Amino acid sequence: MNRDRIYFLLLNIGHFLDHLFMLIFATVAALALYREWNIGYAELLAYATPGFFAFGLFSLPAGWLADRWSRDGMMVVFFIGIGLVSVATGFAMQPIQIGIGLFAIGIFGAIYHPVGLAVVTMKWKNTGMRIAANGVWGNLGVASAALITGFMIDNGGWRLAFILPGILSVFVGLAYLKLRLSDIREEQNQSPPKRVKSGDKTSADYRTLLWRVSAIVFLTTAVSSIIFQSTTFALPKIFGERLQGLAAQFAQWANGTSMVGEGDVATFVGSLAFIVFAVASIAQLVVGSMLDRYGPRRVFMTVALLQLVFFLAMPGLTDGPAFLVALGFMLGAFGQIPINDYMIGKMASGSHRARIYGVRYVIAFSVLALTLPLIAYVYEFHGFDTLFYILATAALVILCAVAALPKRLPTPDTVPQPAE
Image 1: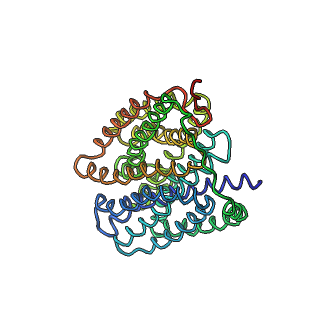
Image 2: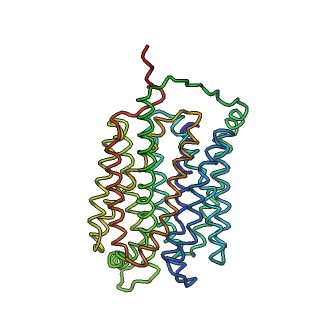
Image 3: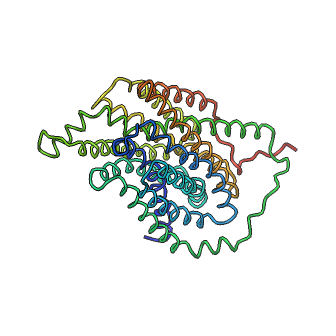
């Protein structure tokens, strides 16, 4: 494997770890801590909220530092920093301590998306497929959070779910540093890119179109973040409530006995969540290929419609039907992820790309953080069926917004020149 492929592989592993770290607590809270610390699920979510705010708010300074200092240097900080604070979080003895640990994980986790995606969209061609492949790794991190944490809860305790991935991340960071050290030095020695004054070369129509597409990108970023956070964070709890019969049948089959332990159910719930996340991640590869062929408008509308249908179908379902419908709306939730990143990668100039991704992820992850209290409130007073209706409404908003996208995106290399 050549250096270029190793480079892309390490960036993909980074995306995997980023989402893994951010969702370990979702399964820990749903399946372990509410019993061990005798704290309700809704109350536990409050300790995760500051971490998700940090995950969003620190994206902008991370992108700015990457553009001003070094993208590869920031990636090293990400790997080693998030690994060390995750290990420390595994030793938390009180809710406030785990809340502080999750906040620190959010700070370092904020580095990946504006920096890693800027590298991916600038270094390689076939942007749609590259973003999609990178996104699949992130989705597998989401999926593995439920699987690995459920397994750790049953076979060593929830603390190992923080400690072992943390140690792995530190070693990956050292490998990344070794691979990219010469490039980091070269990047630091280079003078900052010169800013090209655009003057009045852009037409009024072009600027209007650019603002319209940007508004749609940031609106759909916010609304789709509600869908993504609600589905990925709450799915272990949803499955824990609605797939008990299915999980028990799997456990019986695996153990060869009618006696099913409580710990066995945690592992199987995590496994079922992993299956849904892993299969749904394939949607990103399909979407990435379609983006390069058909553009974002048609693809985005199809994905939004898919979500709308399956969210409306989910209320009241349990076991097998609930599992299949959950797979359907997760295909839509994961499939939409690369679309806005694709549009930003096409429209943004290279020297500012990390910062623009930073703005995108400040919006996305701030909404992710605000969604946690929403999940807690809806679950506490109305139940998950109401949440599914809310998510169906969000999908409808996306569908209407995307209908206003142009067939062709405005890009820096297609700026219309003024008539002479």
